[in-house]
Length: 154
Image (cartoon, rainbow, N blue to C red):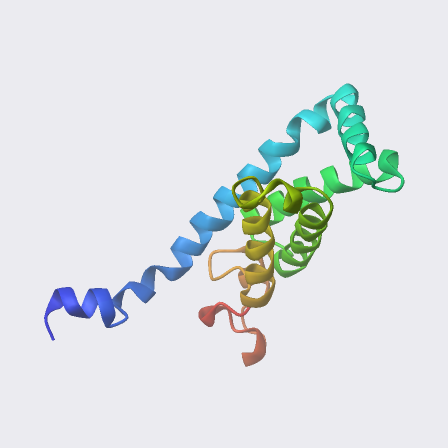
């Protein structure tokens, strides 16, 4: 088998999978933190977000706005660091499933795509785990085979 074929279809790229997952986690995490930073820094922006939630029929928007904002910020930090990543994935998936159902789905495919991708990423990372380059993997070193970080199942 030629080198090019071995690299492209023979699994040689698998060695970089954890590095790619780290890049993906960092990009998604940074996007989530950046996306809510204005709400964290400004009570006025948080109030505007609560008004947005109210206009879309959310109950208790003054409570749900900070819950959603903090959930996104903490999920973003967890993805970047690779700590509590599976839990963060579940929270992220839930948050963006609600966003899709309550707001984005009625906007059409293109506007709903970011929320859908964040939902998909949340499900993926909750099921797969963060990979080797993560706090979770470091904490699970030497544990049972069920939490073996070398196969990305932390």
